[in-house]
Length: 527
Image 1 (cartoon, one colour):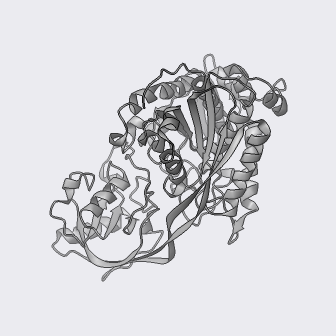
Image 2 (cartoon, rainbow, N blue to C red):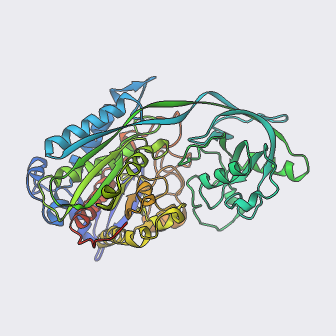
Image 3 (cartoon, rainbow, N blue to C red):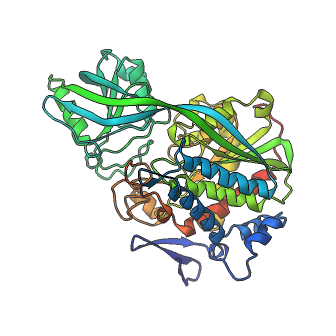
């Protein structure tokens, strides 16, 4: 897949994606690190030996083995189809089969495996949602989408915008809001959850979010804090916590027209019909504990095992594969600190697995966890390299004061490791929001993480750093239709939505960070 090109100081490798080429320049050392040679130890010998140096561990994080595990998750999805499509979502047989697959490998490798069971409750949209006014009827998946974790309801009410200063990011934006109206909010710089929570607190019975109009700000190259395309199109906004009222994301064309009518003293009455039911079932977190290391200084390495809308190969079989490969190759290795690997369920429907795990730790158990490393998407074809630094999280104000400063060591390990191979890494603009490490941050546990992006849209500043194309990070590249991961009814987040080289590169870097954290001399602190 990759072809080295000679250079005096650097070598470039080319990544073939969608019949095009992404160029990434890296130091020569990365080529040897990423190329599996005939001298590399076998997968079996790697997993049976003591990998007690970063070099020995990295030698054993091999592309072929990673791809084999990732392919196994695809097979699991294929063998557990619902309505003709492979599934590994929470609450499906495919998710349970994924848990069984990882648990079997970890037990065989000598880890102490626990399956933590919990009851989950999440909204599930039924029927065909409707959105119209007296003058216009809007087309689902073209003009608007129901936000993930939206509440349900059948509502007819007038719309009312918030103050334009921050579009609902501050509760003061709702001064004069009439309870019982539908809140109309342009996408802003805070999280969707913040906008929705403020609207709900002000008495809104529903929220219509709408995308910003990128052409309205010529020359701007700023990714909004929350995820989504910057082209004015509608897309399925993702809430991190379930809303109790209907929440939709409309296109700029729809939202701005509603806003224009309101400004003309003709506030439109909107009808929303979003029928939702509560789905309740058992879910599972898979916890695998190393027998080595000081249990009073435990480093958690986590990835979410569930998917959304199908097979979920990029999000997040890739991250699950990364930590599985690291764990199998660390199985015989003694470390200063205890390693605990966790594959969480319910991440895609509100961080449910990690929330349950962290909220059910006793005080003594919590104090024994020194650090959390989250691994969420590691094989994006049109990639960025982003560090999930909690300092940039939407809800950083809710973290105990130790979290941000004590997380710097993990962020620095990731940054330094990528720098050593000539690859730039930057903090994710949303920090650890929407990742399972956010649950750890809320109870005072320092954390960091890695991700390579998903959906759309890669900006020019990102292309300047990492190469690639404007638009989709995954799915059709080049393209700008939003990708595969978070769009319902596309069913294309399959094995082919991952890049083998990126998976290898990021997994090696993550292995190095895990090794360093596993042997880091943590000071005794009170969380």
